[in-house]
Image (tube, rainbow, N blue to C red):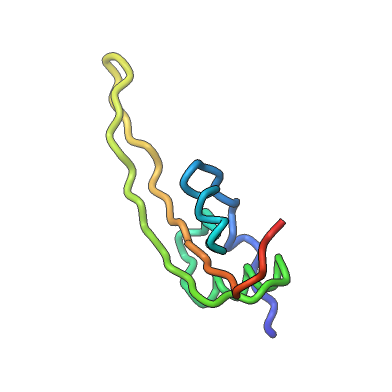
Length: 91
């Protein structure tokens, strides 16, 4: 297997929904904007030594926010929903 850039996976997303999905073998990661399904699959398999069966990618656009008189925008980000082979998990 080719060596993949470790900067593809930024961090594991920790939220109530993400934690509940881990029971079904699905893990959610924040990934680089340049990442695609194949690169995410190889990076997760290499970093966590698990078998990935499916990868779904979601592009999230930043939202407009106001802080008093000042308005701004939250950051855009890309996340990957990774499904692992039955019986495997990430610690």
